[in-house]
Length: 423
Image (cartoon, rainbow, N blue to C red; front, side):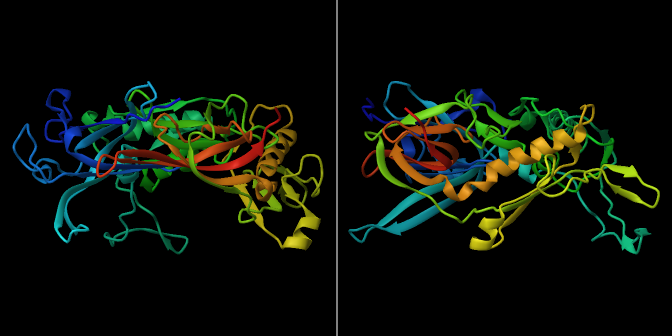
């Protein structure tokens, strides 16, 4: 059982010293509160630390005179369960501020507030191509529209599976080291891990002249919702971008191989678990690139099966629609199962799996658990309530850690897709 003897470590690495470990500054002794928030399928998490207004013992300066935007921070928390310090977020400073509030005695209370994002900030801010038509008047007109120009000149041909394409984008535009790409000083802190389970291929090679951030472009090619693209700081303190198959099986259940975090009633401080029809879906269409066959008059869709047929890409629950109204959802892909014996069947199988994921949304448990500190959890993992046997997918979490006035550490877990497991 946890003893809840809390501990923390907050280490900063200076932007001006290229994040050299030799110049690391441990500011743990100045911490008042720490808050960390992370969401699934979002490029970056958020953190905020309130420090005392006392000068740093090492430098004799206040922390707002030491810290600056884009300094790096590693936050580690210990829930007192024998694991020791666990890294919960590696990130970059966004803002440093001095704050003043009035306490219960009417006296001013000074703090230094440091806010930041995890390392995904770089992926969100790093544009790998952008439209300069808004500032450049001499542009050609194509089809009555101004052609989009990107300032990059090193566009590349990409093709392959979703994992291969995401890897190519990451390698060339994030850690490639060419003129507009990231300096190795920062790029070395970004890692990519791909499971390669999705073997569909891009129909044709594409010329990548994309407009947007590295994160936005990788998301476009990740083949959502079959796959997920998300970021997390692992238990070694390393920051990763993960591209992997969505952790659901063909029945919409959480995949058996998904790591499971177990909680019990001794750990729970508060819970709000129930069902909601907010995400009800009763009509679904899967949009696959137009595969066509040549008829005598015109080109007709390759997928010609009628609604409700074995290989259809359209699914609906008609009684549900008549009773609760039409709640439609669609998904699309730029990939197709090239090389498969039966393209129709393969696409239909995938469409049915996605339909099974969505059609029972309104019957699944979802909500929030607040528990004594769990620094080890990650988004995309499973959560099992030992007593109720409810099993959920972790969509997000936040850590709230306090040194003063009373030491405390709680973790709020946002969870979805809950089902009661058989004993």
